[in-house]
Length: 331
Image (cartoon, rainbow, N blue to C red; front, side):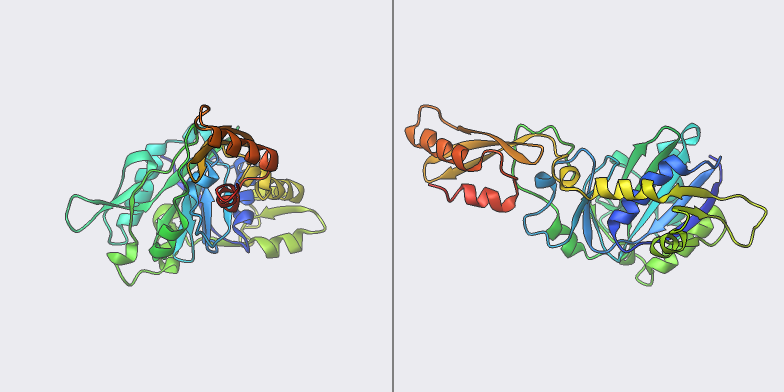
C-alpha cells in the first residue's frame, strides 16, 4: 500500500460542512497517493445513505441528525469521538489494507486493535472473549476516488451514544440496519489519551508528518472573491495545490445533504403498526410521508373504521415520531 501523501485536521462549525467537504474531495482530489483527514463534530447522529431514519434514531435523541453519502451504520459524534477519512484513488483502494493500516496505527497508542466484522476495528475486553468496538467505518465510491472513513472512540459520552441510537419497531423495510456492538473508548485502556494527542500520533504514524489545519469557515471567507477553496502548503511554493474545490459545488452538496428530502425522505419505504384499543392498522411510509393506511384485520369493523379515520386525516402527511403517537390517539 502506498504512503499517505498528506494529513489534514479539518475544523468546521457544522457536521453538514464536513459531509459536503468529503463529498467534494471524492471528486476534487487528484493526487496519486492517499489523503488523510481528521475531524471532530459537535454532538450529532450521522446515519448511512441506505438507512431508515426512524429505525436508527431514538425517539429520545436530543442532537441533530444528518445522513451522509456513504453506506454503513448510524454513529454518534461528539468531542470525544475522533473521525478519520481516507480519500483513496480507486486503483489503490483496498478496504482490508486500509483497515489494517488504521488498526496498526491505533495499536501504537498502547491499545492492541485489529480489523473485524463489517469494516469495524475492535479491541479485546478484559474477559478475553468480548470484542469492544472502537471504530465503525463506511465507504463511498466516486468516479476517481474512494471515500473510506470511520469513527474512533477516544473519550466519547457512551451514555449519550446509547440514548441517541435505536429507533422504533418497523417492518416491510429494506434499509441497511446498524449491527449492535459493544462500544468502548480508548481511554478505558489508556486513560491519559486525548483527542489532540491521538490526532498527532496517528498523523505521524500514517503520514510521517504533523497534519496541516483546514478551517473551512476561514477558508471560505478568504476565498469569497474567487469562489473556490484551494489548499497547498505555504512553505512549499514550488508545489501546486493539493486540491481545489469550487464554492458552488460545496454549497450544492450542503443544500442537498441538509434537506429534509435527503435526511428523512431517503429512508426506504417501511411500515409500522398502530392501534387504538382493539382496533389496529398498518401505516405505510414512503419518501418520509404517509403513503397508505390499511386495517390490520380487514374482517374487524373496528379496525376498518379506525384505518378509515386515519386515512382521511393523515394520508400524505410528513411522518415523524410525534405523528406515530398522534395516530394511536385518534378515534
